[in-house]
Length: 112
Image (cartoon, rainbow, N blue to C red; front, side, top):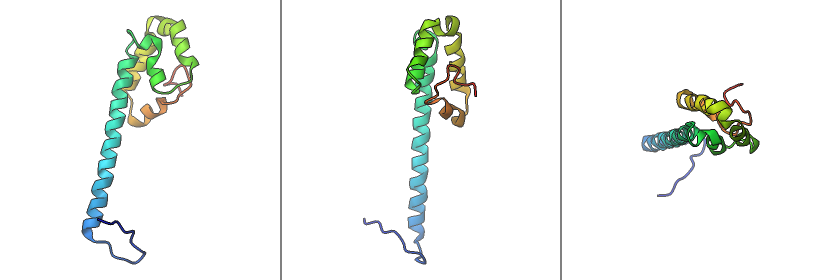
């Protein structure tokens, strides 16, 4: 099947419009599933014992290299308090807010 881009003024068959809508819907669903998968992995890595205290969730989310060092030096921000807060923030945040945690160079990633 060959795909042709319609010229201005051409009528588009209804079947083509339906295919475009379904294709876009599938892309959005796949992006949502990838985002959910990333959220689950980040939450598991953020749980304080054993990975959260090492800042592995921050490495997974793409932070600056010095941020996990701070997690290690402070034993997870004081006996795992910081990764526990990160865990709840990751689990209960909106999709838009979760995206703001990616590549976030701040120690307190939820602080604006």
